[in-house]
Image (cartoon, rainbow, N blue to C red; front, side, top):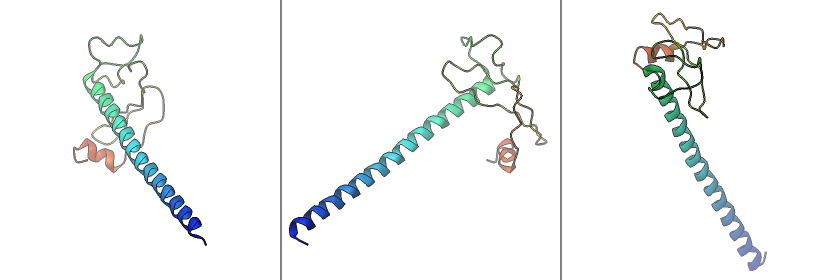
Length: 117
């Protein structure tokens, strides 16, 4: 193998490693950003469910419920409605208001209810 071929091969390997490293870094950064946005949206949704909609939230007619009503609050335009389900102290789950199947209640849900999770 000539010197020119070895230099070209080394440069090709260096470029390939750089591209792989940059792609992995970008993947991790994007994943972190998206997970942060999802966590924020879920926290905001949970807070709106507990406290009810703000006074200026008009939402669609017949939309979500008030705090403690068991209905999810009105969702702002462009927001994801999600599914709300209440779990009683004995571990039984309420049927979601939209008629969807109840989500399973496992040990993690019970720990969260008890403030352990």
